[in-house]
Length: 73
Length: 215
Image 1: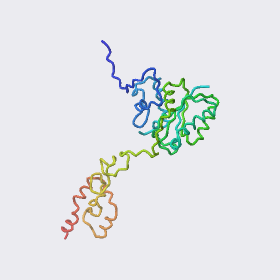
Image 2: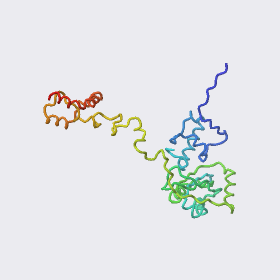
Image 3: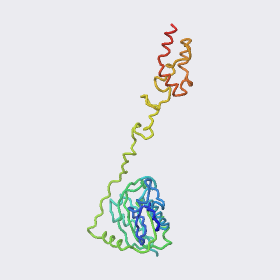
Image 4: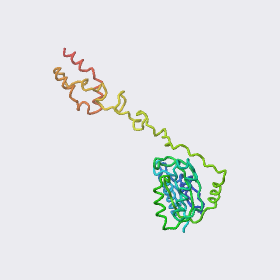
């Protein structure tokens, strides 16, 4: 009997494997932050740990350049 | 010499005067520190996520340039001093993207016009964050509290009917002087429980009837 696969609860971002997560890609980054601007955890983004680290760096760079807020919407 | 990607946040006042001069503010600085600019273009003009040096909008300049590693600290220091460069971000890059070269070439064309940056006004406050009247605030929605009007939530003794002066004294009132003293003193035992307070309001006219009986 085949195992029933659990439905994914992540964002299902579908980032191509060759594409790097860039701090200028605001459309993507805004999906990965919460209503108060917090970085969503891996269970929510559904990313691998390497990708999540890449995302974290991109969000922090975007915050530095005032493209994203540190806190608040 | 290594290749870097640089994002520079430029004051809109400088951009409004002359975009070419604002751009050369960065490119000249790179050249001054022994770097060579590969591409430099206007990335965007947008409202800032938070105000920087009192500005709410600014223009982003994206550039790819080569620079020697040992001249970077001096380059950063000079950018910190420049008032029209609000912020910068320098990252190492592997190669200059092709689209960046195309877009930089397009910016050099004669028909390229830099749009006038809008006025620097703070973003409007969301209506839900505006100061609302007290009655509409969340914390006052359930129980109105100690406000006039006799709504639930008032403490016993706060409503006009709960005044200690109106409450019946235990037994018959001995004299007017004593009654006056009781009215002045806060009757803690009478307002101890809501049930007692309720009986106090129900028997407001009780002293008058007792006096009649005595008479």
